[in-house]
Image (cartoon, rainbow, N blue to C red):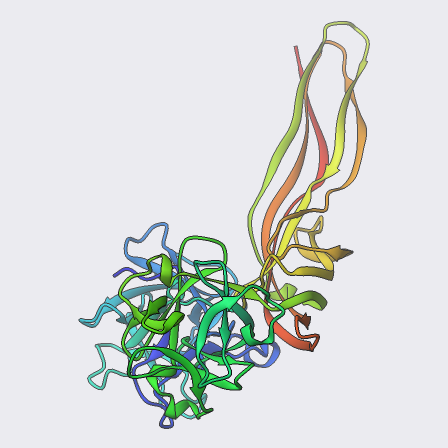
Length: 473
């Protein structure tokens, strides 16, 4: 059965009267050590995101990696059946208790499946045990009659995570403005600094959104005539009216989306009808041009600071030696000779700062202060130096150092041939990090958030060495 590259796992069972419960990793690594638990009440979270990696040797089996700590799902130990996110590397050997492979069995629904641990040959169930409560445990030798081993799979490609503060621009180039009468929404403003175009996004537990007009102080909702008005009051999550819920859908173009109203499953579009000119109406069946909106993040400047890398949870891959240059020298004389190899001595280092569960517009003027993860000669990661300055979120920056020419002297014995080479190690790596995000909004307000979804993707060519081997002619 096919599974998305990035996904979340939702229980089909109600837990403590909550039907929106997702599997998450407990973030305290020192105490929890990758403990998995059905206790997340929200889909959009760095703790609930998992990745599927196809097995290299076993058809239709997959490894499952937790995106928060970069660890693979495996048995907690050889003596327990608890499944935890603690394996640093994938294990393909089906005979080992450390095996990280799972078989995915369908349940007759395109979006539900069971996870069969390939080594144990048991299904992973939502545990009703109290130690730990609602854990992930491979106990079922056969499919569970009560379906405690069946889960909904949510594709992260179906989720569009929007920024908190936005304005919407229509296909006519004008911003959607909230009027003073009945919260009417009309594409008429040309100024993003106009308070009537400011909105706040609230992500619901299942990943859909509610939109609150700052000007009206109320939420958008679809009325019986399908017009969208900002006139809904605040309600608790259990009382959400589907007419106030929207699903953002990515369309072609930077920061462009279509909003599907869950009340009638229609897309919101700019509509001219009767006396309503360029107003927002949930009547489009497709994401045609009138239903496409560009969103503008209402942030003037952003500063990323207090970056803390979780080096123990880093994923290092592609580590291998690379030959920078190689030469062959022959000495046919009866005396030793010396040859020279000139090579630029450059430790190539580059990387990017990104996030796995939040949106940051590349248009926002952003600065960052952060250390830089590097590979040490022992093949482990460390933090070296610092980058401080302007940064375009997600962009790869070159941090290469020590650019100078080195001279290697090669001694060639009499009547001998010498093979000489200069080589280095290179590796790529992903390092999770936490950080503080400070935003200055268009309104002048300040907002500070502690974030735990950072990911630094780096590449380092390091540990340059020289080697020579002599042989007789």
